[in-house]
Length: 416
Image 1 (cartoon, rainbow, N blue to C red):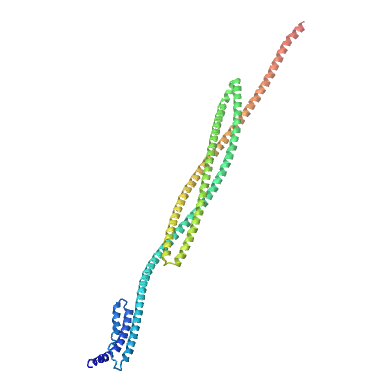
Image 2 (image 1 turned 90 degrees about the vertical axis):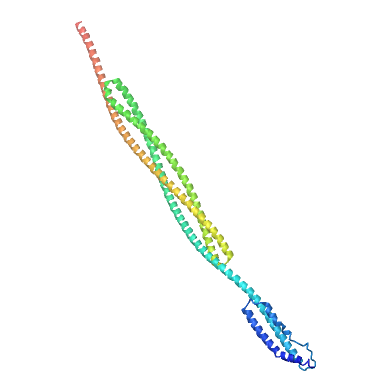
């Protein structure tokens, strides 16, 4: 009996502590909740230290004779309820802590992604600015190339008109040369006739004696003029043949330039199509950049398209360089054509001047021939007159001889 009395004292001594411990447990639970919410790196084994609150339940000390036995059971139930609540809160805090850890990891991941996206955004903005710069340069170069192309086409059209005019002049010159050739042929026939007349005149002079010696100097002059006329005819033939060759050469050059012009037109159309495609690509890229600057896949696609566009720009620059070289070659060909045209015009002027000189010489020869014809006519008239006088003298002599013969006969008759 003496040993049993301290037991209830212990229980009574522990009773005021048991309600205080749950209260302290609640405060510890709330404190641990705040600590777990504030400090996410605390260890989990610290909370199970409060679970031994079930240990102070001492129903093992059976005291059936005590009337206060039901009171500890209610306290135990309350304590168990508090412990269960605390365990539930602890589990909730553990779950929240796990969720917070996952959220922190996601937050760190999002921070890294945000930094990467910002870096990508900066890079893409720089690339976009550089791309815009390259595109402006490409547009400017393409515009300059198109303007140069248009100027070249205008110059080529002017050159074609000039060449057409030169061709017309050439045809007119050829027609004039043909007409001059016909005139030269007619003059040649006249020269042949004059040569025949000279030969006849020579024979007559040889037959007549010293009377024809005075005209030998004129004969030599006429022969020299005939020789010069023949040389002029040979030169005219050579000049006409050379002009025909130059005309054929110009025709070939014109055909070649027409082929080159057609190829340049096709290249121009191709460049215009490429420029249209490039502008469409630029618009699409702008829309895509404005729609999603922060997307990695879009950034990679944009980078690839940027590379493709840079390749196209490089190809366009190479094409522009080729067109510039072709333009320079065409300028050189145009200058050569102009030089050839000037040379042909100089040759044509020279031939025209030679033809005019030949015409003047032919006119002088015609005047000389007319003078000779007048002289020959006068000589023939004089010869005919002398022959008539000679015939009259001969007839007079014959008549006088007959008279002389008849006079003695009459005298003889008179004597008889």
